Image (cartoon, rainbow, N blue to C red; front, top):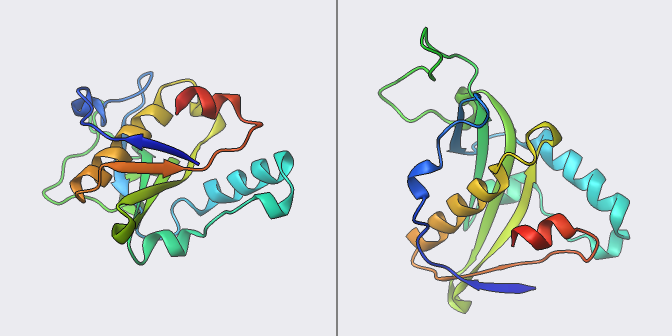
Length: 165
């Protein structure tokens, strides 16, 4: 388990910029939009660690209770200029396009921390900075809840995760 004292990300304004010409938006996950990613994540974790070492939580548990679940969505309906269509209301994840990455935080308010869970990015989008963007966004959500300590559990066979965190 790692602890991180959170501070504001000076590049927070960049969270919704595109990656390599693809328009990406970050939205709360409200349904099953990220379930396919969690299946891939489960398979990946099962290939690295024995079942008793995997403490994976369901999409349902991250959408309910004291948690926030974010998705990175590739725009499915650009306008004529190639920009995401503008609307007067904030779209839900299911209205934003294909979910290509996700991350969540569970809040343990009495203990004064949040636990970051289920960070996963589709293989085709790895190396684009999307994981870092998702981490910055979930940290901002944690700070907005008045919590300045985040914890996460990471396995020993994931050097890419160690480099990110």
